[in-house]
Image (cartoon, rainbow, N blue to C red; front, side, top):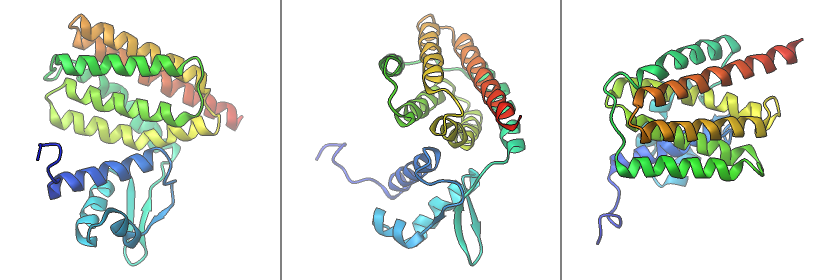
Length: 229
């Protein structure tokens, strides 16, 4: 039996279930307000409700779920004020990734970033639906978390991203944001980040990402103000 064939540990399995549920929330498979069935989830993943509840508790700690005693567990939503506060914090934290315990990418990680750039470029000419783009963004954020050894910073950064991801995805699905425009901007960001990483400039890579978050937020604000006018 190879290492890949070995059965997953209970911890690894729980982390994988948490990742699956988190992705479903961020990609709007589970929309805000949806009540999750512990029984159905336990049956789907083949686990008892006790370890499942631990997974749900972690997602609640990340503010993706909300548990109401005696009622159930629900997918959370974000008010505009909360979204604005989180985005502003994400903008400030993004630059820190290049300054607090930066880690030069390994050859494998750099190759992964190049693959992300290729995936983005391939989507630009013919964007189909927001979902592949949204998944690409999530993969990019996960890759970026490996560029800093400061785990508290990376955990906070990822938690904040996951809170805002579904709002951004919803804006794409409802055409509140232009898919082609967002994809073109992102493809350029990834290409620029790859160039910075190849040059060994982690601070520049972080600065590029900070600018992308800031501009994305401003486009969302402009679209929201236009809709409210």
